[in-house]
Length: 474
Image (cartoon, rainbow, N blue to C red; front, side, top):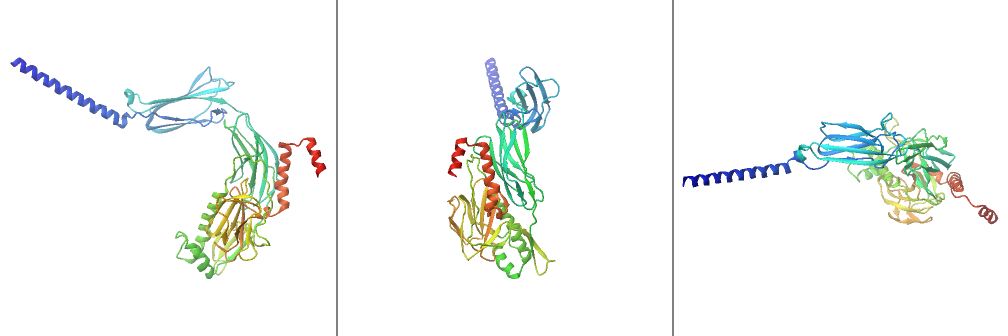
């Protein structure tokens, strides 16, 4: 009996020990599967967007992990030789950005057409028997160190401070181009594909507040090669008018207060601060909205673009010029309150006179916009937009297509307008330009029509018999 009891006791002890081991194992397994130190997410490797390399610019590699990076290695292989470029251990970072440069000397074959990049990275997790999670990535890059080619076909002869110009050019590369644009001091103008692959057209603008101007065509390929070519423009500087405007109590308590009451952010207890808030803060907000709706240009191929002079208000007389530097003062000029620039060309005729669009287009905005009042904006293509401020009523809405001659609105005095008139604005890719140029048929013939004609003669030259036929018909 004693031996039997002893065996039974030993069996219970072993059973308890087994259950304890199982419990410890379960708890340990649960800890391993849930503890942050044993996370199982692999690191990520972000490599360049395009698999082309010019061997001059470094390749940017970004390594990330949710727990922390431990080590990584980066290799380059030309098909015959492999070089360890970068190795880093004992890290304590969640993210590392590595700039991979092509090695100097003769470690790799410089005549190779392709090169392979290999990246291996391990995180600091204790998963996989304390070795961590690993990831690797291999990318083959095509070697391309040839710069794109730019040929300017035709461009406006000159550009006036505050005005516009047109340029048509060819851009080509052995590879696919990744970027094509015009760069000025503070603005970037997109170029739209024109007629055939490899040809581009762009309207550019010289902001009237900038004293100097230079426009450069910039072309880049997927390997990072780039070329820049200056657009040869004769520069015409222009001095804009400075105006001093006396702000009366009637003006501040009437029009200014009405505008300020639209939003408490513009409403100030001090009347002079209220004028400044409307004339400057509200104006900036309104102009941001305008820029938002006038900065777009199509990426589709443009086959032709014809524009006629704008004549939005029949028998309209000029009442204010574009670019005026306006200074508001109270009682005396020594007490200047606020300053702003006038970005349109004001015209007036009869009260609530019809406004018409002189060219086809698409309405991109037709609502109230603070100091501009009721304000439609029309897209005429190629980044050219027209704006009609202070309207009494609108006959169009966003998304409408309009034709030349359509009555789109009536003049009024909504917004910051004391009398019934039209504030007419023209913008090139979000930049306000001199409307007077686009009101002039001769300017359009010399700076727009001629440029297209000269470029077309190069892109799509007429056959001799077509030219003879045209001359006979002419």
